[in-house]
Length: 163
Length: 163
Image (cartoon, rainbow over all chains, first blue to last red; front, side):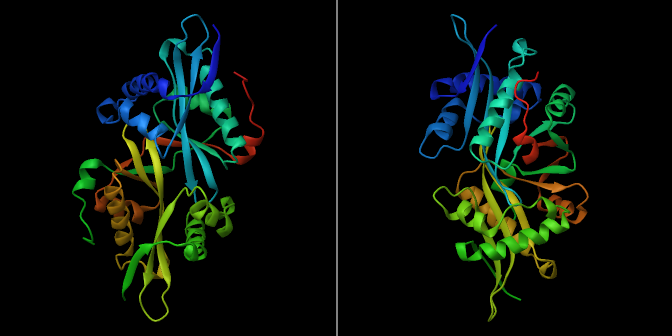
């Protein structure tokens, strides 16, 4: 099978969202998804785009999007501008063909081209295949940082100035 | 003592950077800091600003910046636009007066005003006072996500397409 990796366009948003939902189910987080293709279209291609993405597409007669990587710029006060890889997804039946590495390579290349200090992402501690893949690629894994979140329901009822 | 919380300006960058270095020393990461006030000025107030920040300032005769919170927009494929709190810093001798909570409140208010889905940040797993503070504030802590990074030296020598 042959593939091409290219920049995602507005026409790819529906396919990208399908892959996002596939990953959300795998990560046991589908009940947390409040995003939609319509909102992604606005957030990625509206007046103030906040992300970009790449797709992996088959190059046969009926091209099909089978993987994607979504990135945006983060700001590290220590290092300056960094490229954050929010999602790296290859649909299940197209794994083991090297598409994940091709997508990750594209993201790294983009980071180098745009003078980003580092490339960062996160992985779940029980996702052993992904952890092994990232280690093999040469990424540093740092489990000492804990994610903190003020969830939507808490945002609305936030207690200001209580202590 | 009286304080005011206000938006950071270009004139505050030097003070903000002093606080960033104080936190980097506490987090044992000062050797990783490659950023500078000049770069922060460009990144925060140039053609394409990638962060904003708030400062806590004393309101006596010689106003002094004693705390700051730096934020930027992240993109969650599950939730859409989120406000990320990169640094929340109160200089050591001004702690225990509630300034951290005032800064965090300001960030939460800003997130609500700008329709951000959630507020997110990270804390080191050995920083017990900060962990307790965030839990008391109502944040959810999720230790199952591991940070992955391609460091600058690896970016430059990245092996493309090796598997």
